[in-house]
Amino acid sequence: MLERFRSLDLFTKLCSSWLTIMILMAVLGPLLPLVNPREADVESMGVGLFSSGHVFGTDTNGYDVLANIVDGSRLSLLIAVVSVGLGGFLGAALGIVSAFVRGKFDYVVSLSFNIMLSIPNLVLGLALVAVLATSPDPTQAVSSNRRVVVVMLSLTIVIIPILGRIARGATLTWINREFITAARSMGLKNHQIVLKHVVPNVLPSIYAIGFLAIGVVIVAEGALSLLGVGITDGVSWGAAIARVSGDFTYAPHSMYMPVAVLALTVIACNQIGDYLRAQLDEREGKI
Image: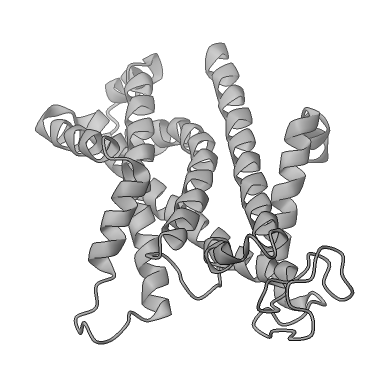
């Protein structure tokens, strides 16, 4: 592991280090010596960066910016990982099976993917959240837990066609290789060929694009929160940005800092995805 890290270029090392810090921050956040992100400091409302007791300052309501970034990292990364993981699993399963069996099933799956991909990710996510988050009783607001589940489910649906198309394309490439033909001639059943020979060779493509998809989900969650249909109680990066969007004139740092953390995380995910894709291209070139 250490040898591989040393072989990375400087930018990829920085991106890997940043993602590691974000993951540790999300996991160990409650153990860090930070102020309570949900308690306002009425004596330090809107103070700037590196103020006493507030490294990243506070917003105009007195909430600590750094504490809210750390607190929001858990839900933002959880939504991204779960959405991409579940969406990748479902999309990969559909893509691999459709490419392997072909016929009408492949036509229907490919058509469904194309229709979903023709709709911008944010528009599709916005429509899904608007439908799924509707309360049966119009007089009652949707609970925060249900809204989190709805956002996660909506972004999962957005990811399915993205990774499904990647899995289908990769499967079409591998099923024509000689070792697949040899496996068929040896009498292996279709499910054995898929599990033993196709899936292991398709997974690297899914991993590479999966990191890019994580960046897409993080941005989409933030955009949904800014539009007022995502998470609204300030426990994610998007919700934190949405809450302080009106403070830009008086405390611009309260918006700059969470936006910067979100942007750097997306850039890091994209770079890791590009690196894995380059490694994949090099690997396939040798086969």
